Length: 317
Image (cartoon, rainbow, N blue to C red; front, side):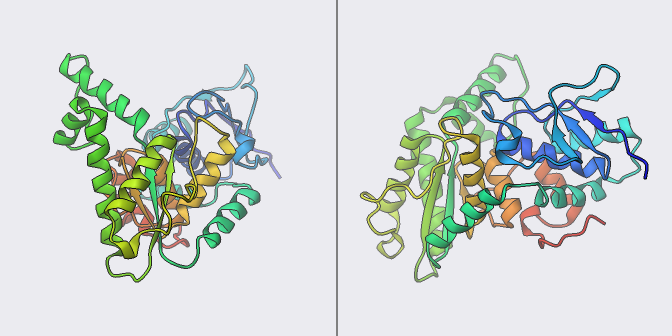
């Protein structure tokens, strides 16, 4: 049997959700060819690859690429990766085929059994009532939107349209207190809409800022009908928190998998790949406005359905 030379890739970048999409995209492009890559342990994703995935002979990080190999450089966005790999490797693969392979590759990422087990146990502990996972990404995302909008006003860059025009202006100009009220009302409305015809319903807040998580939980407990309120919201601890920058990368992965096991997801910010990846892995409906990210829209176009609405047995062909 001929041993294939590995593909050397510069590696995934940015936060956990972005990295997971990048890893799945490369796997979708590489097929059976082994892949080696650099894993950066930095502030955006503080931890090692082996903290969240199992390294295999076919797919594993490496200390550095040998001097005599060509490293494929990409960003994190899946379709950018597809175009670069298609050119570098001479792939005769359509975008639609890549899209199907991407979803299958994301499903097939080598998660640790302990993390999968922890998320399964967490969901079982919440009881049988429908559970809404509320993902809050407010602190760093608000600052990012403001920088982007300020650069646009100063004519340093074009307008980033991850949000509709009026929302872009709102996030660029409004004080944090107003954004908190707006987002909490949006999340409460989504939760109430999902639970309005159910006799019992609960929620769990996932956030990288504990104060903001408590603000969301308090707002929902205050505004939701009594029948939908979780018992003792002011006295019980938060069910689970995603503290990506405060605890370990392993904890962040468990949180993402827990979020994927909720019956529905509400996002405070549609531009977070963390909740989008969770929705895809769990085939979980998103209650709030869906992403404007190009990768999500292209997946919908190619697959004929939102990627979180596909059956888990979706074929790559």
